[in-house]
Length: 260
Image (tube, one colour):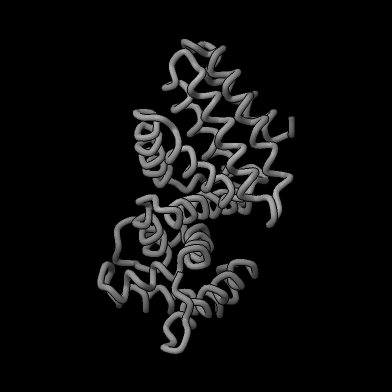
């Protein structure tokens, strides 16, 4: 078992070892983590096959539990934490999540879908921040990964697109609730992830009036300003902002801005 999975199990045991059904839940989580190891073997040619194998194995493990609701609860923690802090690709984890929701028998599929939505909302109370005097890079990375996971889920037909709007507003809209200047180090690269993954859909929302058109322009100019900043943002964040700005500008071209 890899270091991330071992650490996850150790943390889970310290938090939940005294809970009812802890032994059953532990063995279920252990089996899920074993299946997720397959993701390290994926490539363009076998990605879908591996995702299907992993999701089918997890479904079999969940439905064999004395109470599948145990699995519904615990799989959410594994998927979110893996997306945030493990080496696994957030797209792969989002695709497996989508397959679980699509293929679990009722009512567990509906319970999982509701749980994912609730979990996302709870985690949007973040970002988590380091203790005073310690670096922010790790925590920025976790926040970007969470946003990437939510964006990929949205691209796979989960109703989570409003979290992308929230992140973009928290990065660039001072008059919007949730905006804090000291958190822009987190939200700007996270907003860039939404543009990278779901930019075409977000642009379509602005064209169709689902979000105000001036918001799109405000976000685009916000990325441009960050890309030209010399002090507040690290070079990596400025580069991501430049890429997002260029991508948004391309989408506006009548000839061929790609709309996903």
